Amino acid sequence: MTKLAHQIVSQTDQVVTMVSASASGDTFDNIPGTFVYIENGDAFIRTITIEPSESSISGNKSGGMLVADIDLDVPAFSGGVRGKLLFAVPSIYQNAKGVVEMTYSDESGLIVGVARVDQNQL
Image 1 (cartoon, rainbow, N blue to C red):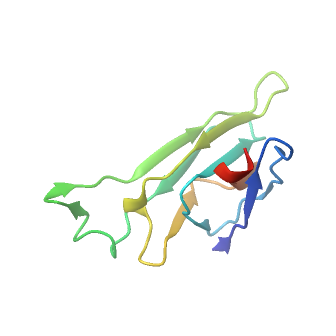
Image 2 (cartoon, rainbow, N blue to C red):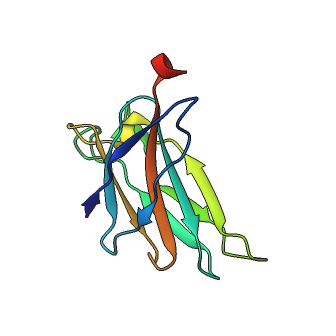
């Protein structure tokens, strides 16, 4: 898995640099204000899966409730436009070090970036 670097987004810097998704999946530090942005340049829908961390819950349960995987579909490339998805991840899905792991049904055509909104720079 490849660890994705955070980029700070502000009023003056709103561009997120994207990198190709890793075949084995990607990780990122889940700092408050973090968002993941994914684009799909392939003709097929891609699914991103994020599993709850075993270190943050007990046997996929939190407070006695089952915690499901997050499965997000990135729309397919269509009509000359890449499919796009922007999302944040709840802290229950990060490990004890604050890292989230995400895998892809197929990384072909996916590019990904991790941005953090710094409230002090808005």
